[in-house]
Image (cartoon, rainbow, N blue to C red; front, side):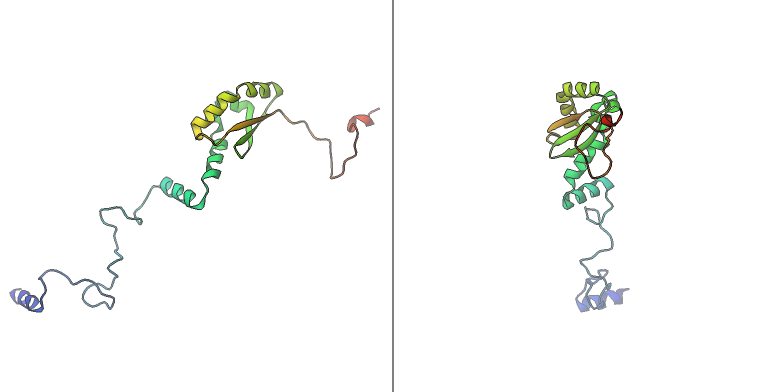
Length: 162
């Protein structure tokens, strides 16, 4: 062992310390010194990360934040407005800050128009301010008697019954 230490000292190396890696592969491992196999004790982008953090970073990079926020209004509708309102009203569309809601009856459409300020406040508290700026309340839709692309003006099917 003493002889090995003397030879290392003669070459100018400290015994027990390896030479840094080189491209040619001599004097250490053949791996690039900038690229390690492990991440070490500090933060590294190669470390396992929570899925939520990765998804939010990807959504930000790809510009999906607005679509995801709009989707939260539809996905969390029951929690945002409450069980009773969600039972009688469904969101239909959200475009440019205007949420279109279809009510199950004309009475519920009137009730939703009266509750509109409170509903907007609840939605803003749940998904963020500015996502829904105004609401358009629609009543139930009647069945359409129009069939096909052409339409004749007039009263419709009522004028053929008698």
